[in-house]
Length: 375
Ligand SMILES: [Fe+2]
Ligand SMILES: [Fe+2]
Image 1: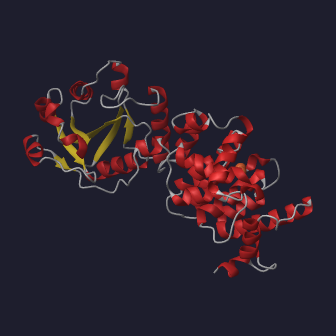
Image 2: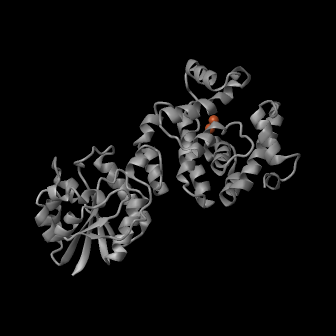
Image 3: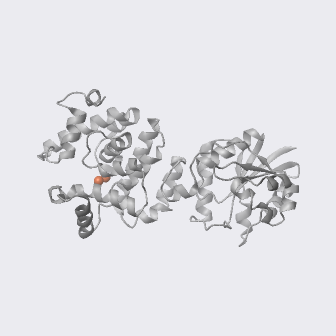
């Protein structure tokens, strides 16, 4: 009998961890996998609508290009306040009488399983396979009683739907990030209280470009570039009084710092306080996106460059974008060089801000190749 894996969940939103688990289940159990998004999760409120969650799931599966993956809307279509796994299993039993059903659950669900409605019947209809999750120890008695088996796969990564909704750790297809931003889901709702219109469009564009540059350059956890890009200008419209208060707190001699630069510092503070992001790489990239500084790390260099060259800026930056996608360090140096020329032409003194002066000196030297100076 051919196996059919039933993979239920809120998928709020679906992420690469889900896809890796489904891939492993398909291979290890030699099975087709059907994703069954819940209508209304029993344990937590979903923050995206049924419609949005399904659309994101469809995008993810289209990108995954695995012919074994399908989606069933049977739980959503039942449209009941409470959805029970036993009803879902009856549905699949009727639909595929010649298939062996396999119910895929998380280790965190193992210990609560005896309390599920008709737990004995569930175990008699389907083989129950659980996915190991760090920090959860399955109760051996429960495992034995319901003849549960481990999938033997624990490499789904540290991503979770919560870490995405809270903009802490993004490991999901880029097309879903695009969906979230264009449909105003999750973190976008908070961001949109700070930015709108052209400024929001610019921030999304920086995020997308920064992510693409990080991804194409094989930088670990490219989601950090997306987060920093999306939030880099969050404080651009902070009321004067608030901005002044933050600057006063952070820099006693803040009056010497030109006001157009303030938002990089106040932005980092908003990101820390409001978005609860404590990743020093992300905070640092935001804190110096405008001035640059000496010894920037890879994400900071990418944000600096992406901010200047993102395609909605209104100038022909295609050459720089191409360069950054191929080699972010070389691209960054060229953007920096072009920016110094631009500032000089504009008549502003690039040396008037100490961080900028140090950045130019460190990476561009006299007119030498900044890369060799850096290494
Ligand atoms: Fe900025
Ligand atoms: Fe910007």
